[in-house]
Length: 148
Image (cartoon, rainbow, N blue to C red; front, side):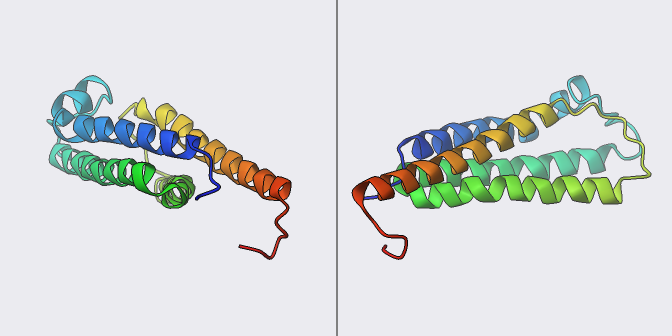
């Protein structure tokens, strides 16, 4: 029996479903969303490049979504690992954009950035909460730190 709380599975499946929706938005609806919501100029010289990058981002959302749903339903420890990796990957991505794009000017508004901050915060809070709950359960039962 895993000592991780059930909410790890609930959060993983919920975020997985959110990722599947993001995947649909970034692939199937990419033309409309890119222009209407993100404010991209897809008719310009870099339109195809922007579209390609958005679709590449979208298909990775399908992969992350499927992985979170699967792990949330089958493996709480695996789901917890995924929930820990996601914010780390977002930090690396943000740092890369900051480094490589420091002198660039963009045209898009990217309203999804706020959603991703909330997404990352949910991941971090879930991981920290699960670790605290597991630690408290182990202390209550009388496990010593060296025991499995």
